[in-house]
Image 1 (cartoon, one colour):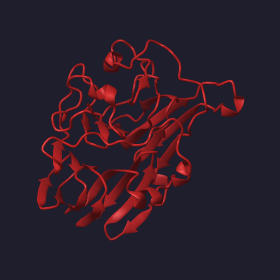
Image 2 (cartoon, helix red, strand yellow):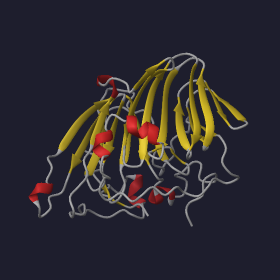
Image 3 (spheres, one colour):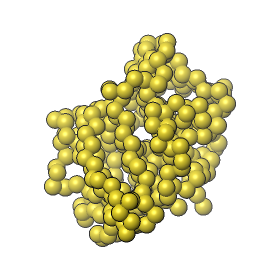
Image 4 (tube, helix red, strand yellow):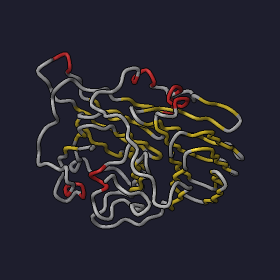
Length: 304
């Protein structure tokens, strides 16, 4: 079961999590995994073809594919091993098996295993999230060398239960209004939990939320604006495990991979339109246990 140790102000919705603790520090044994940053504006794409330019980066359990798609672009998956996720900003046609779904405007789409394709008639930005069981994509990731050996502390990926009524295309409109006491806008499937935050201005630097996760990574995808990701590793008795603090400026588009047990918090710094998406694979149990937080909880049951 994934867990997190948290240090939140009482006004933060996350203070009510079952894993929340008052104060505390990260476990300090057996060293720590490394962070990883992909600044897509400074990197050559891993795929550059008739469909557009695609950048790939990964965590232990997941791959992020960020695409600037050309009009008419089509993205196929054949014999896809498990469910994957697409974040779509404009018009798209999604096909899987005998099913076809049209979306227009901001949507998050859960796409079933097997054969599928996405078509973007007008092009635009497309983000797809795969588990690292998609070996072809994991091998292309810009930071694949970071995971030549498994990252510390992260258990093997175990998908969550099949969706109610079986696998099919499930599309959810992203235009969900904020709600008091709810943290962001969260959807989950069998393989991912995705939190799509509202666009925001600069974050109040006197109200940050340093915390750490015991046994899972976090992917923080910047789709607009710019963010500083602050990371700190506790000292262990073995000084060879010690790492310097990091304060990494990540303008959009970018992905920060935040390892378990690193104390971290992120601050939006652009004047406007700071858009962040947090990615977890598999879904988080603590977020899932909060009533009303997961917007499609009826479609995707929790384990047990």
